Length: 255
Image (cartoon, rainbow, N blue to C red; front, side, top):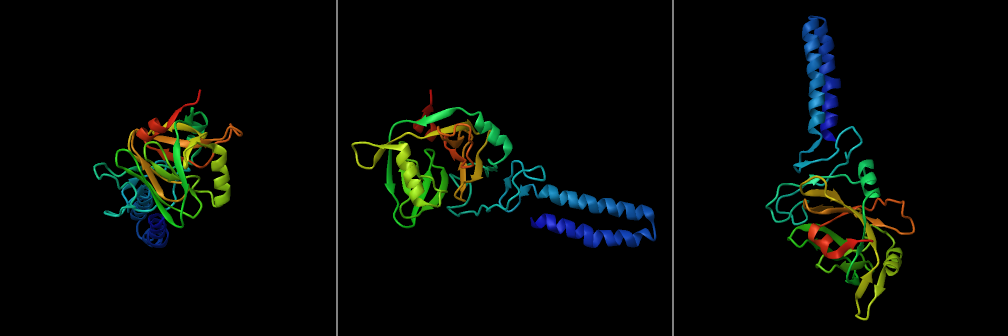
């Protein structure tokens, strides 16, 4: 990131040459300035662990293998801005669900199955899909391509089925395998299952969803991953969030 580059430039291109110059006149002054240059670099790197533009604190950021990718910034008043919900809560904590720690937690998570029925229809070209939770929070915003399946859960939550799948026909075939038609047109009984764990941070969190858009949930939300009965030991990288009320209304423990 920019702050890290600036820190390195200041230390290597400015401070070090000055140290060498001062070394000709006084070792103590040179050593003090050298320590100052190192402290400047360390301070800039610590600042880099905070997404300054958006105010997000980043779980696992830094050199220890955490999420150090560039992130979209929150923009006040932008309806698509990360974490923009009712405006009554602080900026959410950005979480990286691709870490080995979360992979291990999800591998050991209980398995849940969907209950009840859902409504589904193929999207028209470039159809916007906004997922709103029961508490009014905007969970995520996406845009469906023609033929992609849009599902509406019993609680009213709308989302694109397998939104990250680039092949619409593959996604549709997967939908047909995981859903049974009912006597009512457009209404299906889902057979899909997920592994899910509680939001373990104790606060509102935000991720970058598999389809590239910000997604957030409250402290009572769930972190989920699809469960494939044909590959029970596999933990997919298709990881996402589910609101607490929506999870209770849609899923039950698979016994």
